[in-house]
Length: 110
Image (tube, rainbow, N blue to C red; front, top):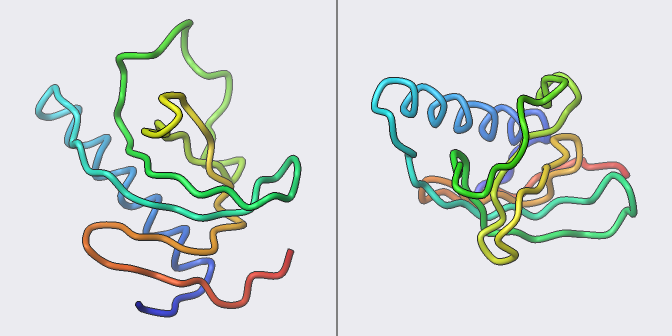
């Protein structure tokens, strides 16, 4: 397991999100990469663990988002265990398993 900073973890997750979006735009289908994330919820302060992925469209309802989640320090994902959309607080990631790499985040002060 690699030890990284919170900023590095957020960058890895946002880059993974951007790869997904570019893949969907150029190929018309989801990238279908699953990843695990452990983070602290903004609202309650409890730790949440998720197996999730980007690009799931089958459960969408409604229209476009009113804001850019990344500008607010969030990334929207589909939680594969609860079968629902969730947002990940980029400022509170504790652990990330993505693309075959495991990362532990150091220096998180919440």
